[in-house]
Image (cartoon, rainbow, N blue to C red; front, side, top):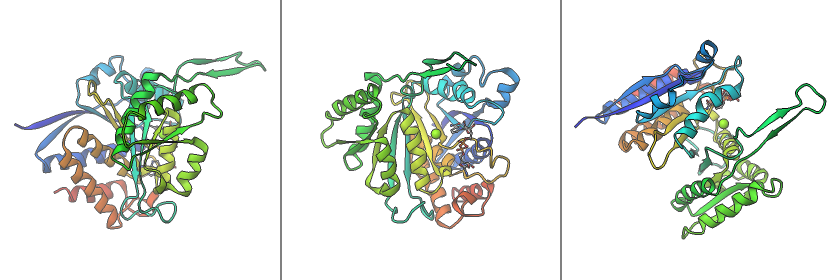
Length: 350
Ligand code: NAI
Ligand code: MG
């Protein structure tokens, strides 16, 4: 029986388009090598569509995606459209409608890559970010526009169900990774939601034999991740904290261009979404030098999620050995273009 997967690909804007294009070709090569096929449904849901129609995706966009096996995204955002419009018009609705409440962001020091500091050969961190509630909320507003008394209110939403399910997922991850789960908090300054976070995380993780919680204030954790990043293996964090920490960890490991992100609905009731951590990078868009490693690593996580574990391994081995041979894009100190790097990866998937 032949295996075929239907994947919705949303290249988006800027370098999202470059990295998605080459990553799809590499996925096709890995699929051919392992005897399955991927049918891509390319969606032009991006800032151009917004400028033309006032929407980042069609009215029935979520319904269209729901029949697929997964979603593969580049990045969205352009200087001409406010960032909250691009994010809330596409990414956040997909994450929430499909209950992708886990955002998994692994990072390690890749072969051939010099990190931002010495002595981090053993760097191996997984950030488990809560992905559908927390600080990213629509509750609040701007008041008194144009007056001297103008002000803004932004409410966070933390639920027991939301915290406990991300803590459970993270505890399971930590169990296979040394047993310590670092929980990012700020319960000294943020006195309602964060003590609640601490309590529910502690209570949830207590049910996992062999896993202990190391509760660390986010500011101190930021410093620790720079000074001693190998002392941390698994992190559970709220939507905002997890977002910031994952870029920080990627920076420590050499470039935000290498970082992958999986938006998971663990129960598999809905499609999950895979994307690089980085954005559309207007400063290098159109130059053909975007690092496709984050996109390739995300694609490998997608293949693993689809059950094609051998293909996922081949794809990861292909980009890792390319880096190990000293081929890299300029953000990592190399001189390869996006296309040149991807061609090397494809050649290794023959
Ligand atoms: P960014 O991640 O696009 O860029 C930050 C810096 O890292 C830039 O100097 C960029 O050149 C560099 N960089 C990022 N990815 C790279 C890659 N693959 N290869 C080489 N260098 C890379 O973040 P920024 O500048 O804050 O945001 C730009 C736009 O992207 C904004 O509109 C923002 O809203 C959007 N954005 C979208 C995301 C998404 O679609 N998931 C995530 C983050 C930002
Ligand atoms: Mg981010």
